[in-house]
Length: 149
Image (cartoon, rainbow, N blue to C red; front, side, top):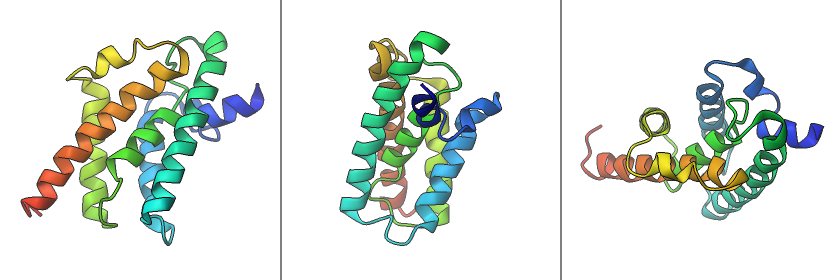
């Protein structure tokens, strides 16, 4: 169970309590911006699929201990942030805007995001953040296309 907890908490970030989801999102943005080649299409898609599978598995495993969608589980924020920045140019201003948009949708949970949480086990844990990431991505694309900054 230690391995599942490590994945679900993203190497312990989830244990920091309040703000753990935000911290995991910041770490994800930072890694994506700093890793050379992280904006390669195949790397991004492979990484998202890996994080999604690992998240569903680990969140489902720790549910019996921590309950459904515990605040300790932050792998879902990583997946959502990855979706937000998918195919977006590697630029700190876009990463910052994506981060703010993702956190808004993840916290406010409008537009069926709250309903996605109701899926069973790890699926519900991951689905709401993936949907929040998708909404953030769409708005970020509009902002980029409109050349608002």
